Image 1 (cartoon, rainbow, N blue to C red):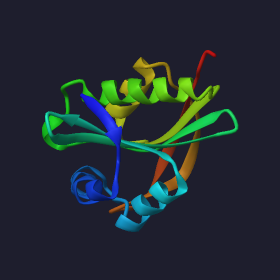
Image 2: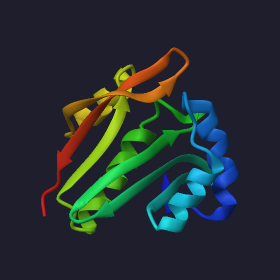
Image 3: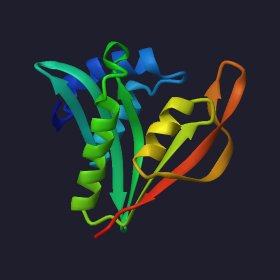
Image 4: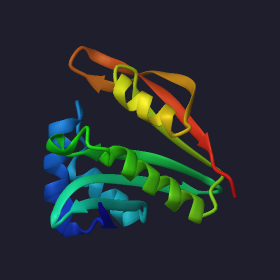
Length: 147
């Protein structure tokens, strides 16, 4: 996969993927606000097609993966692992010391991927994510980065 910054022209494509894979998808405004805030925002492309995207904030020695998704037709091909490795490289290059993320308690596949790449569960945010049954817990995970 090749990575490049998300630009305004990518928003429709990213939103289409977001709506397919997320239980409570972000809105166009949330994506636009992240771009305006200057967060690290990337798409992963195969040939000319967007296959994945991620957004990450970095400040004061910490990185936080805000959103991360792979197109449903491209899942289970190692693209999520590749994208996550890319984010770890970017965070390391920016000299962050720790990287955080939240994951739905029900998303055991994502949790397993994060654990394979060195993330550890730290805590639970109760009732963090909206879902059809009300609210779902989030597991906060983190990984130390070597400087």
